[in-house]
Length: 367
Image (cartoon, rainbow, N blue to C red; front, top):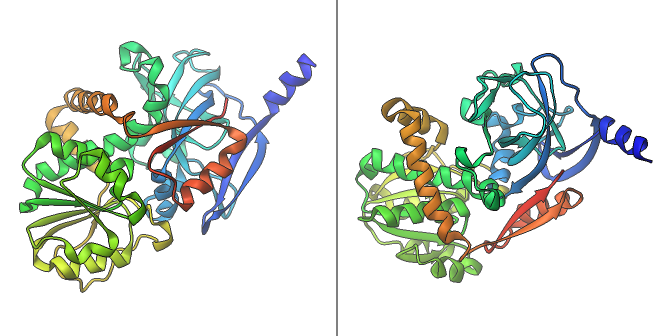
């Protein structure tokens, strides 16, 4: 039985695939576990987080290139997730079996990587198909205490690091541009983790009124966070105060976007698209003839590269790390984390696709 188990674990890998043109259609597929050649390593995916952010990756897969990180069979895709993996086998002298890494993974049980620039802090995947993709997503961090990882907070690292990093960088981007002259910052999909992470940063910074837009069912949650000066439903867009405003759109709801633009008109000084929690609306950016600032999609890696060049990556990462620790000290008051087996990934994925409760965070254990 022992040899049979070893044989099965060696030859079989599991991939969770989604239809690239219809995210609601998904399937589990088996494949031969990759084998490391010289200079490569195979990582066993231990666990990963699933959030509305991953739905954005799927919706924007062709536009921004998310499907290209982890290729799949024609018509299907492997949506990227943030997770933790252990080196299962290695043909690279700097990669030791048993070392753990945090980074960008497919919803799969294994990943073949070609490590370069290997240090005690991590490595970059230099796989040929990833060469033209944003370097931020190709970086893997070694999970050690010296590298800023607390073993007791593994789930928090996966669930919140990527989302809160986007929150931090959004806050930094707005401040870097003097908030485009706005006095109020309006956050769409205010119950999403990226949105209330940004609200957390804005309240720490001070000086701006922070308004949350959300569905009627999430109003109490958003108010309970204590991070928004005002919370309105999407039906109340026309009640927004006529003040110099910046809109950060996490929802991607084209109807809300158009109504907000026409209501605020010239008072809307920045219209920044980030996510598509309302995936059924697609990347609804309204129409070209809307009044107010022209909607622009925000791409966090661009601001990270800019700040790394200006401040140096160590200083910028230190700033992000300090803010992240402050956020993590509070977030368990608002959200509880659920763990599920890899066999449950389809059910969890569809729960999030249909609109999960903001009081829950989901982690899939794959290893």
